[in-house]
Length: 180
Image 1 (spheres, rainbow, N blue to C red):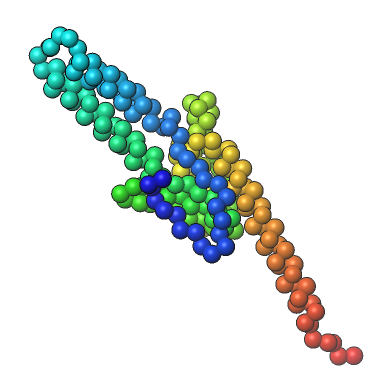
Image 2 (cartoon, helix red, strand yellow):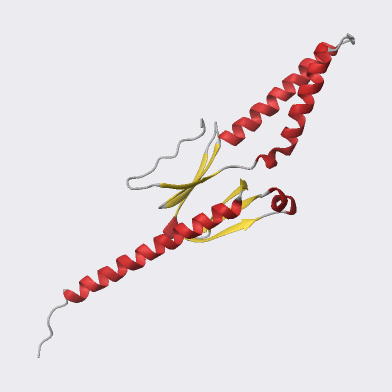
């Protein structure tokens, strides 16, 4: 992967990584093969039509531009769940990174359109404390990522409750003796 690098902290482990769905790029996925086909047809056709090479070069250039755009968008997006946080890193040349710690997330929502349900992609929104919302559109298999985030949030909450219980138990043993 050539996209953005995610720096993990000490004792932080990668739990799950989500990818963007290629269905988001339907126009590119249609334009690339059509442009490639007609461009190559015009170049290798037996009949030479006036300006066919110019038109073929335009079509092949359009194909290259759409393919490069698709590659940069796809490879420039990282959606990572670790045992401590959710990281959304979007962009190749210009980057936008949202990080939400699991203990600061209030909820995770998934929105899907009709075509998103059919083709299994959607928008995942992680809402944090203080009305912070980190939406990422076009995640492939959004419900799998939602389930993984919810499970990781549950583990963090259990460990925090266990730590609080241990601290309360330690405080009881250290309480000063009462006077009789």
